[in-house]
Length: 282
Length: 238
Image 1 (cartoon, each protein chain N blue to C red):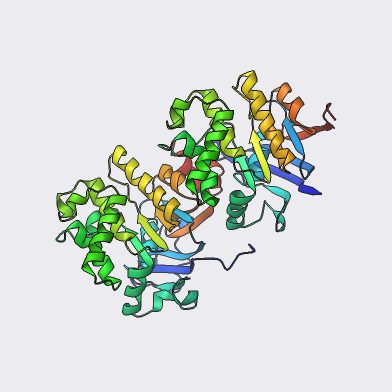
Image 2: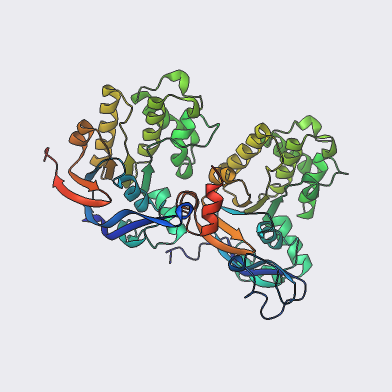
């Protein structure tokens, strides 16, 4: 074990999400060795199972895998967008990592989500309220965390928009009138508004054209470098993973099939599926 | 004191596209390295030099054997240590400089060189000054300092590559072909920089095909053939 084995920021053990009515064989009869996440006996769907990992402060962890492998489910469970079926997670800045956060009350979960985490979704509509202005969206996150001072809120919003290169002039415009790349940058501003120690990024560059992708990626990298935010980056794009992450988890059929240093996963993948994934890059 | 002890190290690759054909890249490698020593890894292309280096850096997972590295906090087996421990060592002690420059796109030459420094140094201007000094010594034209290295020539990229490895002043440096595609004068600058690191206590494992570079740098050479060590000898300059 590492000498600083207790230095984790987020600890996840056996995180599991199953849809439907599983029985005692459901987990054993699904997974990469069956090439399926549907239980043959109950037809329940194992979105993810037995997901365990530690994330360290300031670390960037990548999760890769094909569509339907459970990547997004993992981050959505951790951000309380979904209810877990099983497993546990602890966040160091919450009760010094002593209280399992996924079983907390909704009120406590809202506190954790608004103060200690940020999320950037693939679709800006999931992360932004399109009926609010871009400034209003950032304000929403700040107000949820207990900041009610209008002057401070506007100042913070304008700082964030400047940092993410959204013209401050458009602070009172609705994101609906923005380009895709700008919407994504407003979403990032909102996600980091409360200086969270942990940020989830779910396929944030998918669907953007390459020049806009580059801008969003550069922004994320800068934020990581300047603010030292730990991140979980979900992507099926291995070049995004290579550029942003230190460590990578490879998922298939709802399970982790391999985890390792990103350069090792890309240059010396061990699992058959990781090899297929990497060789598909060429 | 030995900074590195490699015993029974082997590395096989499974080529899944070719019906899981196995390639033995390294076979039963054994050697030790003293603190502050420079060892040259030699051998023909394909003899396993880079594979060995990548096993030491954990870009490749060794198939069998042990790689005991004596870190500031005691011995670590680089084959089995957990990923976070390796990340920690990469940040603070071990630097790998590959044969080819691979950098994050759209970052200026100055900032590419300081990448490691930025991780530990809060004062960015201080880091950039060190980077500029280094680029100056390596004779990289001023007009390229703010440009993106992806667009540079082979020799210019090589200088960036070497600079970013050396600037971190690692405790253990793995460096693959540091003087390839450099002119004689720049070659000397690079060799001097590596010798300067050695003088400050850095242990260096260097791969090179260049006799002049090896002659000037190495305390000892290890010669590889078909993934095996065929000879270990003191260099002539001892």
